[in-house]
Image (cartoon, rainbow, N blue to C red; front, side, top):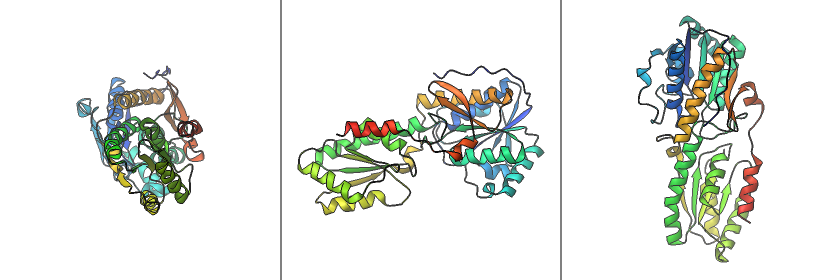
Length: 333
């Protein structure tokens, strides 16, 4: 259980807005539920903004009640829908968004999403003076300033469950399986999944390696009887076709690898208990932060503590944990 911060109330809000943006992640609905109910308990009216920043610019907002968030904590996806909005990336688009909020009487905005969403939230706060709080919600867990993000635990467990099933076939046929997980710029999913599944090798964007060298090593290990699980976990990376290219090199070395791309299966499904609790704690804390006068921050985790982290840091710095990579190397020597 996360320790909730104790912040004295110094700011009064009458009406707030909530939106989800970017890629969906398990736990978004749990966060929405917590935000709505925590706000209503403080006599704050809540508007749910449909389809992220696109809906905000278009003024698509609906009043939310306690009943409107009943029975959603266990559901994947997002009740408010999501979208990627090119218009919001412009100053003019963000100006339209701020005007739409003011026209509706909304005094503060809470944005739930990943780095793109939180970057947009920061720009909106800086340019318009609007009170904005962010919640890190991405299966990649790549948000700088927070140890954890809503949806990451579910995505990892979904991938682990799939790989545990794949392993049965890999061992039965003594064949390599290349399992591709999400992670274009971040290898957090691949690393944790690979460690948990005892993968023979883990490939992540942070440590690019030559595919011909990797395939030679894997094939040599197999011939020498040093192969174990038959599972190779590959983060998708920024260039399409990475896993297929690796398979091609392995075929040149006499292997018959199989490819399994988990794709969007990692985004869906019921959130784990961890993600439900994390989202609930972050949602309640966001309302606490608003009343304490915070703005342009996100609710972040540091160990078991919830802390305010500046939204501006998200674009300025990248998250990286070398300890996990060191563990990967240690367990595969």
